[in-house]
Length: 255
Image 1 (cartoon, rainbow, N blue to C red):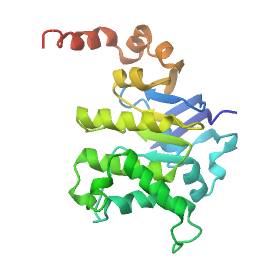
Image 2: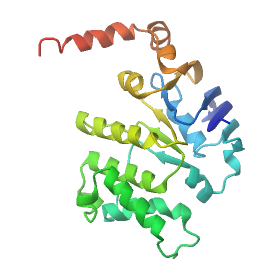
Image 3: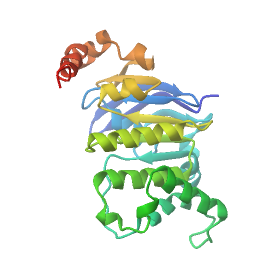
Image 4: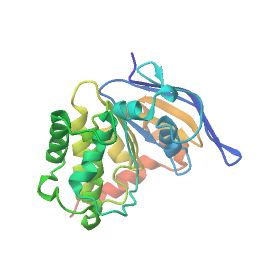
């Protein structure tokens, strides 16, 4: 059984079709990259899957319609990391990470369990945040803040991560850290990742599968290197993407 199966998903917003008849599936162990030009519908698709916007068609998690999941049960199976985090509260890093355990709490004032403590501690360890666990999130750099919210997802312990430009606005060091953490998390059996990315090099480097979008529709889907071919990318981006990427890479030959 597929971990995630999306069938003929369409989103109509503001009087126009943003996404049209998009279908793809995700197996356990997959890292699916959703790529395409600006306005292709990438973020809209992940918003629909995470039940953030209305849609037609179906999105099934292990064969069950995601529309039928209660919010706390959905959070136990699917974790979502957005591009930006508007933080206006002085929670500590540990408190932000601990929010990931609320999906398992039987009540608002439920006592912490040993499982909760282990999950939070492991998430802090995995993301390298133990030393600043007591620090206010208002004092964090962009990379540290993104790692804190990634740690919250790790503590949440879902089976599927949905990431919308997880390294957007981060410098190269933090990009490498975040993608390495996600790859490490994915290694546990029964897990998978769906990411929206603009950087095609990162998609090729980290992805096992890909969906290439063109103006709201699927131009190609399948194994990442079968989807992101020079010919397909040129058709969708209306430029020789491979030549441009190789031109950029050649700038490093004499550095």
